Length: 352
Ligand code: SAH
Ligand code: AVI
Image 1 (tube, helix red, strand yellow):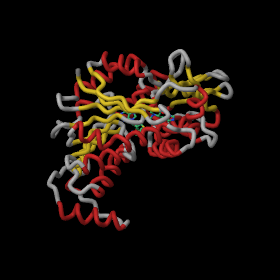
Image 2: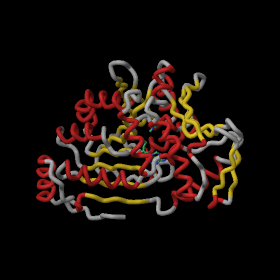
Image 3: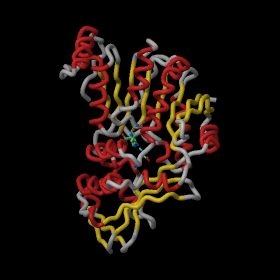
Image 4: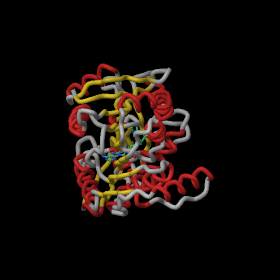
């Protein structure tokens, strides 16, 4: 845990903001930042459990949250810039068009962001809340510690007077650690990350999200939409091979964290659109028969030649699917916003 002070230092914040405008390095206004970590070794246990469970199943599988070590996070940032990966650009375009309206209609004084990453698109919302004169606090919540700490530092320097209360944790286990609201708030879950849950867990997770919402609060969620499978598959199998590297990176995480001896070069990247379930599946396919040792788990894993390990599903939505999921979780949609090509949707919902 780094900083727990809460006193505001307007002079320091203003100086930092002026320095940012000049492009100079800034002294961080520490007192505006608080970061709580709930991982403390627990994440290694969670990884070990997931690996033991996932690599001993008849169809091998790993949850996508383990992609995001520092290298994985950098690779994800590169994915967001790829010509084939449209979701980031489309979601940003919607935010740019609608942020003012969102700020006015919600009257939010704080923004809680789950899976906040580098908070790149978040600035569009923070700008709108700042311009509306309501912005008081930002709560970035992510499993990757460096991203929470970096965005806390940067954003307190960029927005004078902003309080940042970062939460380093797993949103599947630590949602109850989101700090108590300081006023009406927006809970943002951007990037289409909700699509990484399979349908049953998705509804369960949405129910937990609904419990975070008070009467004046809104869920702002980004969802990728069903479209031409060729467009979808290209977005997850780019020509430069960045997504393939991101996919294989999970093997390096297992090598480092659990003493495994995967050679990523033994695996091909696979991305296919499952037309029945309307989700993208990313897999790693063994190029030959393999025996992999996961030393810390005393586990020997056998792969047949051509055997696949599923590393991610990324569900694509229709308005009906989303309305159904929200209703099952006790929420109702207040606004449905898309980009001009209807590639991606941003929705605002409230507890019903
Ligand atoms: N919101 C950003 C980042 C999306 S990438 C955007 O829209 O571009 C998904 C983010 O969610 C990553 O930063 C990853 O570290 C985080 N994440 C994934 N699973 C998580 C979990 N179970 N708990 C907390 N954060 C998680
Ligand atoms: C974060 N998540 C929603 C991304 C997605 O599109 O499912 C992760 C990603 N996987 C491959 N490319 C991007």
